[in-house]
Amino acid sequence: MGRALCLVIALILGPAGVRAAEIVARVASVVDGDTVVLDGGGEQVRLVGIQAPKLPLGRAGFRAWPLAEESKKALQDLVLGKRVTLTFGGRRRDRHGRLLAHLRGEDGTWIQGAMLARGMARVYSFPDNRSRVADMLKMETRARTQGRGIWGLDYYAVIGPENAARAIGTFQVVEGRVVDAAKVKGRTYLNFGPDWRTDFTVTIPPGTAKIFRDLAPLTLKGRRIRVRGWLKSYNGPSIEATHPEQIEVLAD
Image (cartoon, one colour):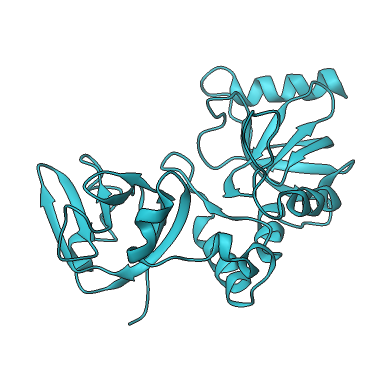
């Protein structure tokens, strides 16, 4: 099993043109709510598209996020010791060398979907790995509306633009109305207040016009949106949106 699994993974990730659609393996252990280790070789797999509450994992000074143990337990119940099918929809390894995959149980359960439905994770996407994000956002919204799992805690609550400055350095989901939209030197700015120097802003980097074509960011002025990402301090609190799935346009 071990050698065969390693061979299959090598084929998937190896020379150009050798791109299998999926692999099947058994889960040997669960690291946290979005990471597992495969039997036969110890390959780690990051469940692409979701972010579960984080455990310290040996990091000095790092405190576990609320419900981190519960999230890990939920994933264990779904996959530990069981065979899963890995499918790929974009970049196949992250910078830590982990496989980036969607997991499906033997009974057909989509594992990412199950974690989101239970409120044990939230959507966390990247521009080079965007498959199934629309479906995941719907499942997250349903769990959040029902207050399941993490969505029953203030720690993970959707925040307003006025509270963004208090959350610099954290991953947040921010919801509010775009006051103004402008493009300056190729970068698009969605401003949520009258003072762009201090109020919350979403920025869209240059060179992304094609990927954002269907969203048309400059037309979002006056619209209510929900945006997710890491909050940074740049002329006030800001989130950089590198792909359209980070932005949900809401009904007025």
